Length: 480
Image (cartoon, rainbow, N blue to C red; front, side, top):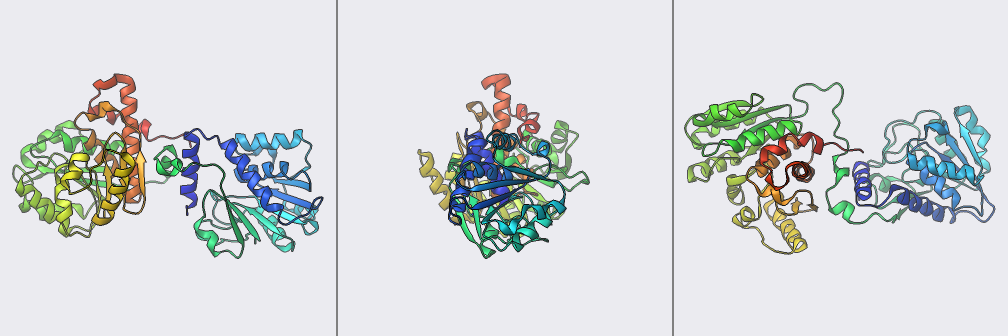
């Protein structure tokens, strides 16, 4: 079962895998036509009421498969405002084939369709990506379709119904049959309608592999204020200074509004020297120990997400401090590097995203397998046992929360250089305030690997971790 947003992401991922959207529309329209035939006899009258999006495009295709019937397509709005190239192409095909079409720009023209005289009506006004109350002329059309007392087949979801909830904010079509595509949508179970799920040729890989579709919907609202897109605390440093600085800078490049770095006072000036964009908080001493845990908890309470581990080192006193922090914290934490070894034994109410490489995974008591699919299954089981999300870094990254396991294929051998994992931790931390943990981990892996690929295009295998920072904005963009 897929939400509307997730379905849109899968659709985009399928296109990125080489499955043309035009091909998917052809399959969708054919599936609609098959269901319509269940309700009509040859020469019966079928009216397809269509919007200007791809939902309407599916119906344009369906009309071509219904040539044994008396078909009429009613387009709500001007043809020159059809919203996608493939829908426009299919509208043009209707004109070339001289299939009857009507353009409706005013709600008063709905009566001229004589919907009550149809033997079947296809509702293709709005699809799963549209929510809220219907506007005119769609609202009037929805009322007229429902009042026509004739079988109604809805494309993907009845217009006016939220595909995720099954509820309507105003007028909505009461469909007798819904033809939805690829997978069930959560809200359709609530409808008093038959539902057919049509296989339209989207490969399983579009869900399994992280792709550009997963970047959809991340635009900032025009009225955004400082802090709306996340405030982070990086707990790190001591033996190493570059790691927490890389993590913090990556989080900023990935969209976080504010990034704080809590590090031992012995290295605070050095960490600050990497970037004036970081807000550095010195901690007493030369390494993170239990004596500073109360300070860390106080600072963590003021932010959205914590990234714990970069550059901390693996001393016993530091591991004890990490354990004490996690035991008393109940927020969101990206756990990386030496902090990972604490996770299997700690009792915490925090939501953790753990980012081990294969060696660190083994150190946590996790699985080891050479075969990717076998390892993916084992990582899923281990994540379920831990009760936390795992992002296992490798040639292919494996992401699992114990329920769903995904694979990321971006990245290149040049990223074996030190520091790229610190960048990844920062990117995931920046995403966590606005994404669910598994999604933040999956998108973080995809974006970091993509940034590495862009860097490798410029410098080859000579890349260093800082090369990724300036590539992150481009890696986060999408044409969707």
